[in-house]
Length: 465
Figure 1 (cartoon, rainbow, N blue to C red):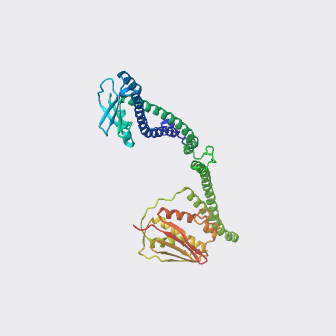
Figure 2: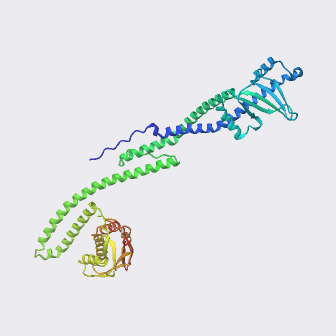
Figure 3: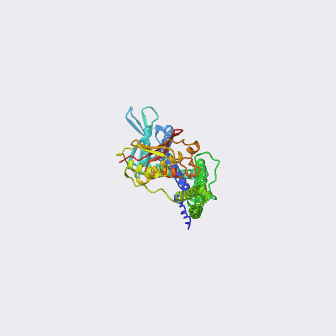
């Protein structure tokens, strides 16, 4: 029974990439504006104080037209009010005289902070600006600037509360403007990123999720894109991968069905061949000379057919058993495998060049099967006449014969089942199974050399521990 695809949970808006991009854009703009706000607010504060000083200068010009540079208290109060200052004075450091240009109508009292406009630069100005936001109520600013003549300093006293209020309003306006800019920029970037990044990635993500649920479906493949950037390359690579994997899944499904059918056919074929073999056994008792001549060929043909069906069935439905590595006496194992493989090849001589003390770490059953397959293949390749020798150099086992060598076509398909055999009645399963057995032990089987003087296979074994 096929499991139903598990539906993916719906993506929360908090986890959405587009929402995160939008939020991060707004946050980034606000952070940049916050960094810009301090110097801009400092410049605003300096300009505010310069405006008050300039207004005080203009108000003090009325003294030039007044006799003895004196004005009435009422006029002085009006001038101070129009300039938005509390007091205007000028000091002459050369003569040590301090002249009150516009006196306040009432005595001035309270905490005072002295500010020199000529020194309001850099970090000093930034720190003073930030301190203004937390200034105590009622504090006064004593602003000093260049006077009417060299050596003279103009002093203007103003309340700090209007400056503090103006800075708060300035900050609020900057914040609202920054928020508007960030929302506008965030919206534009969101739209741009959504079209160029988020939507293609979302399409790729949905395709990956659907592909995970149903890898074999060809109806849900991701379509290629003409884009040549990184996202386009990723989408095209995913599209190609989905096509390849989907085709592979369908091919494997068909192979599985075909394998099941072959197994059933093999079962019936073996039963039929067994019946034919029983019939050939009955024919062996016939005294007809024609039957006697034909019967050996018939028996060999039946035996080859039975072996082919048996090997095919074994290869199709069995996996390589897990290797049980242990110390193995190599000389004895090879000797036993050779006795089994050469039982039907009396014309083939065998030489075991492995010393009796040779010890390797391997699976004894795997090693026996590999050696028996290789020695049997060598004897069959020499048509029952020739020599087979086995040697060991401490790392690799060599199985050499004096046969005619392997043709190029056989070398290209040497370890492929049903394709690597050089005999008309061979299946090519022996070498494929032998390599699988060697790899299960952590070793490797490969062709060493082949030519008119013979063929040599090399079995590399895992190092003894």
